[in-house]
Image (tube, one colour):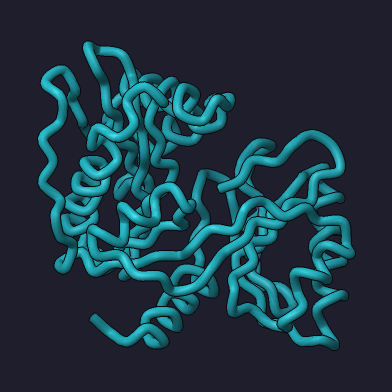
Length: 268
């Protein structure tokens, strides 16, 4: 695999500076040292994916993004990476009224170098790619069971992904006796070396039984079929040891900073 610095630079170039919109009507905008997404509808993901700022420009750029999303009546996320400049950008975001969510670790693995992916699932568990509205409903219900959160945004998002070709998001759902017990998705923008693993969650009573590892294996196969070289994931402490055993390595950290004057914002 390439060296750490080379992979991180490639990730920044392709996935952050070269970000693509993640849904119908959403737009990517490059404005004064910032790359942001403005969702096509209320409830989509709004936020900053990349910035190249310094001590002289940071406060103005932060204020400009607050004004932009406030003019739309939107809450939004500034996705701050551990190597972003200036070094005190987190403090500047806090001073501007942002609230940090738990820090995660950006981890990557070469699709070809993943190991120990074979999993024998319990006899009554089926893991499959979501291809129709019924599968979307199962994935959303599994999300709700895993995270104890409303899954309507995920249902709406995945339904929009059934029609486009090529699809840029593919959901995977695990069922036990026909009931949804786990879900996850693969974000797969055409022409990118990286495919993202997102939203992996398992209902509490089914954790520790190989469902997460099996979902990584299935999504790795789907990524390879789409021509991606690397998988990336923003890993919580609970999933990092599993990913390390599979061959993932840490690149940097990422912290969602939320600006939410009203109701809670959705975190990607």
